[in-house]
Image 1 (cartoon, rainbow, N blue to C red):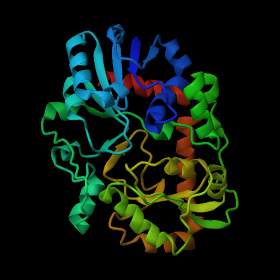
Image 2 (image 1 turned 120 degrees about the vertical axis):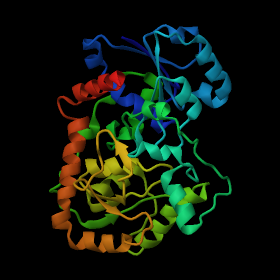
Image 3 (image 1 turned 120 degrees about the horizontal axis):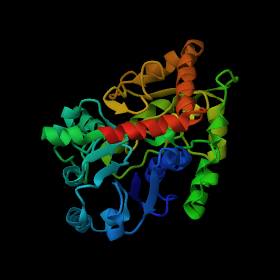
Length: 357
C-alpha cells in the first residue's frame, strides 16, 4: 500500500504534527515488512493523488493558508479508488472540522469524546471543559468560539480515535531530537530515550511538582490553570524552570499535577509516567484514547470544578506508599506501548485496524 501524508516539512515548530508522525517514522521497517510505504508531502500538487491512501495532517500549511482552496482542490482531484483520511492532531477532544469530516472517508483524532453523540451539542469555547466553565462559573471569552455541530449519524461514524502524543518521545533530550529530525529527517535521530526511565522505587524527596504556565488568550481555557495554581501554590511553586532541571525535579517528585491546557492531554502526563511519578489530573472519563492511558489504575483524578483538589493533594501526600501503585501501573503501560520489543508491531497492527473501519 502506498500512502501519502500531507504534512508540513518543519516539525520543530509543531509538536502535535511531530507526535503524529513520530510512531510512523519509528516503525518504518515494520511497515515495510507488510509492504506499506510512506511519502511525506509538504506541497499540494497532482502527485498527491498517486497513491492508495492520503492522510491529511490538520496542521498542513495549505489548510492554514487557504482552507477553502485546499478543500476544492482535494474534492476536484480525489479518485474514488484513493481512500482519504483527515488526521486531526490537536490535543483536545473537540473542535472537529466539519468540512473535512464531510469530504474525507475517515476522521482520525488522537482523543475523542467517549460519547460521540455529544458532538451534536454546541460547546462554548470549542471544548467540553471550556463549555463547563462557561456554564458553571460564567467564564466568558473575549474571542468567542464554538464547535461545529455534528448531528448526522453518518458523519459521527467517521470519527475514530487514532493515537496521540503519548506515543512520542518524552525523554530528557526529546526537544533536541525533535529539532534535529526537523532538519535532517533521518530515523536514526529518533532512537528511543524512553528506555531511560526512572524506576518507581527510586527515593523521592519532593512531594509535588506542577511547573505550569497560566497565561492563555482564551479565558475559558486559562480558567482551570489559574485556579489550580492558586491551590497548588500552597504546597509548591509553579514557576517554570529549564527542561533539564524540570526533568530532574520529576525524577525526584512523588506526584505531578497536570491540568488541562489548550487540550485535555499534556506532555507532562507522559513525562510523569516515564519518570515514575503519580499523575494527578482533572477527570478524564469523558475522553477516549488509544492506548487507554487514563483510568482508575493509572492516575488520581480531581473534579473539574476543583472543589476537591486541595483534599486530593493532602490525601495523596499522606498516602504515597499506597498510591505509588498508580505510577507503577502507568509506567508499565507506557513503556509497553513505547519501548517494549514489540511496540512497533503493536502500533502497525493498530494502524491496520484503523484502515479496516
